Length: 414
Image 1 (tube, rainbow, N blue to C red):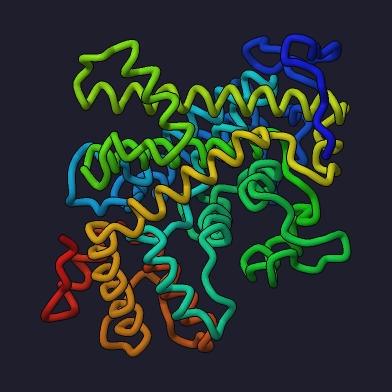
Image 2: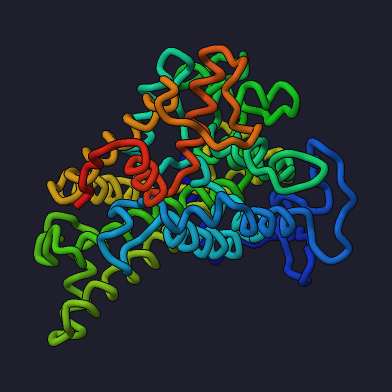
């Protein structure tokens, strides 16, 4: 895609709309008052937009509460100041709102998507997902994004009139497609078959799997990248997995570090780390805003559907920042995610989740007596997926305690 030469100051929106609170929105923003609706129709609220209601339902859900005891990188017992899925999610929400505000789109929708994006993650992070994917290999595998959809459309059981949270079409679309289209216009999967949970739901509530999602969803997606790039970096430095001096290997970090040390030559380690991280987040956010404004000026979408029908994302890093971010990710993969102190509990956690799945599958262990978890009468596929639903909803701590309940020896995570 050819990059526009327009600068941020030259880009001016001549047509805007307003939402609750009186803030002006761009024409390509999703219109909270013209939602495509919910699968089960509900009367509108007199005090909140539909997207504000979605955000509130997400925050009050059980799945949101469980995020506080689910692994981001470090498992739950390693320290009080490391990120969990919950703190990561809140940080993503803050960045998503900042991007949405700058681009004049619906902040509530962007925040709702940020807050719900990790609902499908298993205990113990990606290690748990790998286990469930292996256990379900014969039945379509396990995908945390598809699991997030299952949580908000089926597994949350709080409301009298429906299962799930009955979220708006736009929220579900952004949840499923925040990383881009899943199929081409002929319906063929772009990265293999579409996960069954998504394809099944799509048959009754078409989410336009061939298109890009809204600007709001794209804000949430790149906010996730910015948050975990920088906050994992901070946690790795504080844990001592690598030293501040090692950041010389990462150009974006090195430049910021030099600026901090020149400005504050006697700053202590803790404040130095925070100063590096906050400046790097700001740099990335401002880069995304400038690049997105440039792309939007070039595309000139007149409404949200026009954004969906583009063949590229509009909320992206600039080419230069994208390359620097790849270098940062490679550094983190090598120096943090593969560090022995991170890998060791991963191996133990995989044993725990694998043991639990096999125990429930064989009948050695029993699921709760609630009828929603009953396995009687289910075929092999439905049985395996129901067990996976139960395990995926566990927190790290609950999974460890369940393993201790059914097994004589539980691997140590530390």
